[in-house]
Image (cartoon, rainbow, N blue to C red; front, side, top):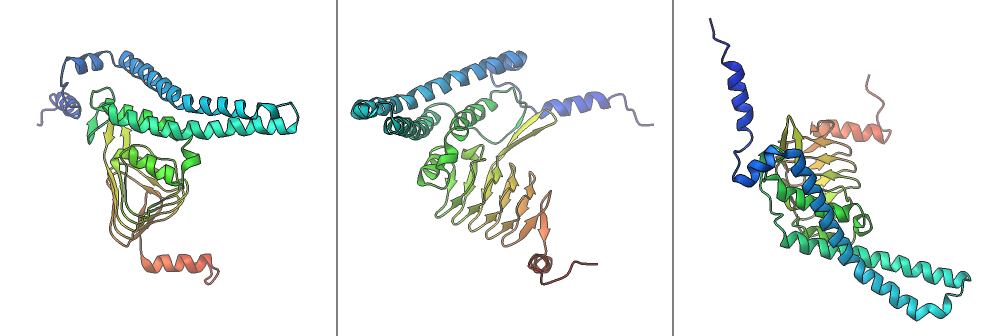
Length: 283
């Protein structure tokens, strides 16, 4: 008869092996006081956010001051004065946004934000650079990036955050995370509201794995790409499809659905004909 008494210990050992051992005393303390460490990391992120916003607001406030000084004779309380004041604040907002993009890229370069492929616990030293990188990126993503999408400023910012972008890539989305772990080839198209992030979690594990999208691939509007995905040259991902971790889309294939699966060319042709009203519904 098989001895089952050792199975729980074995399973426990396997579960623990998923998490690399502490690399130093700092990480041992971090894991021992996980919640406290997490609170400290959040407060540190707030501090960095304050620095970033402060540095970005400085030129915006300077522009506001100069505009008020120049146009103060027009600010008499009538409609022209209100327009000048509104224009001044609007201009200051865009100066703030562009300055914030530069500030965040500089901080991302200076601070220890270089992370590697990883699978393990959330509260480890391996996750700290990833946390800092995304924390800085989100300062722009949730404030000004929607105004820079589809502009050269947006492309420059993504490249400044470490995202590899080929020639003539078309990026019509700001729903991006982990930009330094994303690589786009030449003539890649990311449709509107595509969600692309190089991490996922589950079972107590954080997994960080790169995404590579080869030349001329197209991701339809609203599709979702998770970490550890590779899309071949000329491949097409249909709108609102989901590529789960580990997906490998061969070149020139069309994938769709949740989760996304390959769609035969003949089936795709029938779908297009049905959409165009050239073919009746199948029985």
